[in-house]
Image (cartoon, rainbow, N blue to C red; front, side, top):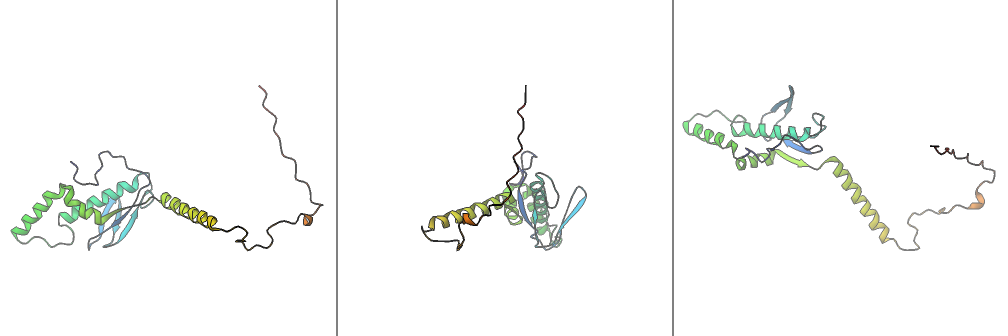
Length: 180
């Protein structure tokens, strides 16, 4: 059984996904990808996608899951924003939490606070265009016959005003059919 609901059985990540990642702790979250450090300040939310912070198909989902797992691990292990255990009871409590780190239901509450999937950029744009088209159609259906909605007085061209001395258009280029 996977240790988290965010775990993937295969290592193929879906391209085009976008996420908001929030550092819910009071300390900087630090991670690395390919040796390049990533730092998210406390209580700051960043976008992670296939373009941000690194470019690559499926990179957004890969990094979002990696960062979330790392931050949840740090929180559950008590490495973030906590004082060292001073009593045996506190030490026992921490060891119980650490043992439960592999239980998905214990991790899910934190994962849901840290990571939220956003809609892909293309879908957001398409939905906006679709909604605009629906508004346009609804407006067109509400129009009444005989009412000028454009407020244009010169809606038609007066054919008598077209100059008769205008130059003719150049002939259209034609290609010869291929011979076999």
